[in-house]
Length: 191
Image (cartoon, rainbow, N blue to C red; front, side, top):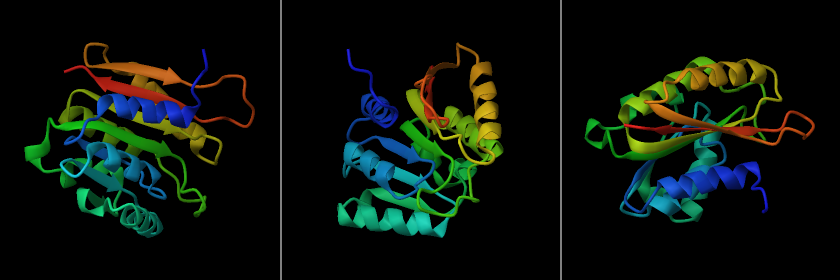
């Protein structure tokens, strides 16, 4: 058996949750890699909503999507992911099959601008309300930066407290690596 590294495992979870025509959320666009990945899966009949508070991330993601001819099936919003319900139409409630968040800072960007526990948990709560049954939220938790441990602990406390009849929660990570390696918390909505 070969253990999957963190990012391939995150993508595996997304691939198992999504099909062409589905709706997906990228809660942290960053440089556009996950947005493009999601857009390729959902295809031209699906849609991806991408959120990021930084203009640089929206610009980078737009360019990545344009290069891959995926822009038409994506809506990019420069705001925090805690506003997800305000941007997804009510007609699409119950159709969102997957969401991904890379918690931390924009790679290559300003390391003082980081995700925060309050906004991340608010986004998760909203997604659990409007996602389809069996929808999956994948959180890749980078916690080796200032404030990272606070968000990590709050998200873990929140996820651990979810009732098992509401969601299945999985934690996946390597425990013998140095430098605070990232890990995954995946939440599958039950109904």
